[in-house]
Amino acid sequence: MARPVPSAFRGALFALAAAVSFGITTPVVALAGRGVGPLTTAALLYLGACLSGLLLMLTGRTAGTPLARTDGKRLILVALFGAALAPALLAWGLQRSGGTVGSLLLNLEAVFTVLLARAFYREPIGLRVAAAVTLMTAAATLLAATSTGAGGFRWSGLGALAVGGATLAWALDNTLTRPLASHDPVTVVAAKGALGAALTVTLAFALREPWPHMIPMLVLLACGATGYGLSLRFYLLAQRRIGAARTASIFALAPFVGAVLGWTLGDRVSAGLTTVAAALFGAGVFLHVTDQYRRRPDDESAIVSAGQPP
Picture 1 (cartoon, rainbow, N blue to C red):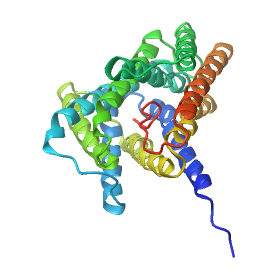
Picture 2: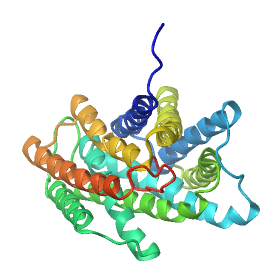
Picture 3: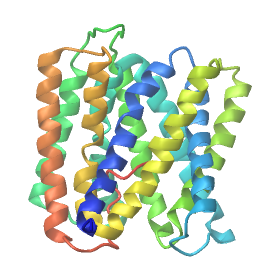
Picture 4: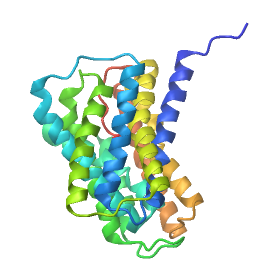
């Protein structure tokens, strides 16, 4: 008779699945989004996320209270920042920075989330978190100093700034979403995706942005469904088994998964500087997640916004 798989081990596998399913989307979006408008790319990503959320709602159990009419204004703001502005900036930036650099820069979401949590909720910033923010900021600055790339991409500092802007928008999304924590998160993702997709589709048509052919379109929809929809489901399943802090520590691998895949796909920019920046980001992420682990090792209901699927 086969022994049952321990809950903690299953939780770790779910967290790893969430990190991989989100991490691989960044370099894939960089490739599939070539020649596609940034608003169009954002629309396809969050349309995929919306469809994934609706499917999960039909096939799974809810885990929270339903959304109320009073949540409407907050949901609109969440969709504006997290499902429209952020993915559009990411798509625009990836076409100029590439999948490797773009993936590593996604670590900045943790930096901005920490700073916004301090500004809006007066959350304390200890020495470990301050050191983490400093290291990750230094890593981003180092990547911004790289002016040329290889593998078919022409690197641009504006691209890095756009990806950084996307992480700031997602950090604002995290901050605004926090009061919605008691609601079913899959429902929130579906509603956010629907609103974001509707807004970006409207703007894309108004600005006459180019749309992709069938295969790139399906790839972008799949990236949204897996990296922005299914990844959240895996994340929540992991949280139930191993807690918020442990799940966040494993999910922090996501940007590095994307960077490795981007490198494998040929986006090999300035190997020396990129490696140093990756090491700085890694050290910063380690300090950040271990601080969370020390403060909330077993709190499965804790809200750890930084590093969650957008």
